[in-house]
Image (cartoon, rainbow, N blue to C red; front, top):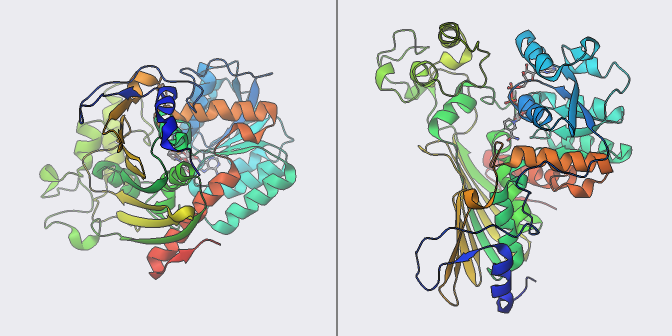
Length: 462
Ligand SMILES: NC(=O)c1ccc[n+]([C@@H]2O[C@H](COP(=O)([O-])OP(=O)(O)OC[C@H]3O[C@@H](n4cnc5c(N)ncnc54)[C@H](O)[C@@H]3O)[C@@H](O)[C@H]2O)c1
């Protein structure tokens, strides 16, 4: 049972919330927040490490460089001493940044584990189908892990990683980075404080944004389930995980609906061609024109390997869209993941939750509504508005006024690294929230949601 609302005033004060007085719907911005309530320090400059943690990055692409960036900013905390990366340009750039010795550079993950252990930990940022292999090999050699989500491609593989981690007693942090972002931590702090009364239900919405959808899940790396995962895991394991974390009860039942409705051959406009650069008749008005997205607007380029200088950069983009996967018409791709999906969840204590993953929005930014017996909370990844049913008073909290967000995912990317380094240094998994065990629960929700979507069943978690 959560605390009753008679301690609400104290709880609000502790939460750093600003009261809007009696004026419903007014706007005010928060003051610095009580750092004791799940809130990450503004800058991860001073964790209590006894030594610099040495790590090897397996997969020096986008995410490998995000975590590698922490080592460049805080070299006293993290030192990247090895890399496995098959694309020569990526490997060379990573080696140059981290000054990695010649005998610690590898083409593929298997080569790392041919060597005796030469670091404290492995950072696994390979594509989804290459998580299980390196995770098992690394654990067998006694490395601790920072493991990108999704953990693996099946529930069975997830269990194998968990069992080996337990047997070897290793620290494994799953990169559920939202748990380390001040905004998401604030929602948890508000729910846990009891200011909403008894938690009753939740709505959570992930608007992927239509161009992001086309880049990652139609043309890009996460477009096919067999190569990666169903989108409910590839994209939305974050959301299922954060809901499970906020609600803090076991999930009992899962049901789901959804499909690939729009990005299909039969929806190709008349006059469209296989590539945007093949003389497509509708390219000029198509929201998914690769020429517009990548060349004219220079957006979504983080999976391209490009020179910095013009005109070489522009020429390389054009080559990519005339020859590579990102220049294909969104209606003529080999994608099969859903572009919209809903998941309904029943948790213990009669708490219900709905999750909605949606490609067709012009905006990003997860939206959340939390309903309690004595109040509710509405959030959009920037502002939170908390309303007290008894008094009608409202309080507002703004993330920019209350936290330093110097990394992606609202500060969560580096917040995760900071806590993981502490856990590795102290060999104490309780310093993490996204442990393997905790993350397994939300992955199971995802695997069962997919089963429900395919079979039109209600799945129970027993
Ligand atoms: N936590 C998050 O919010 C988040 C966000 C995006 C992606 N991800 C996950 O992170 C992982 C990596 O995604 P990304 O966007 O960095 O992709 P990416 O393609 O940019 O990076 C993956 C890298 O792995 C390399 N690689 C391929 N085969 C390899 C092998 N055999 N050995 C070593 N390296 C190999 C690729 O060449 C590539 O450079 C994926 O599992 C993805 O789902 C997580």
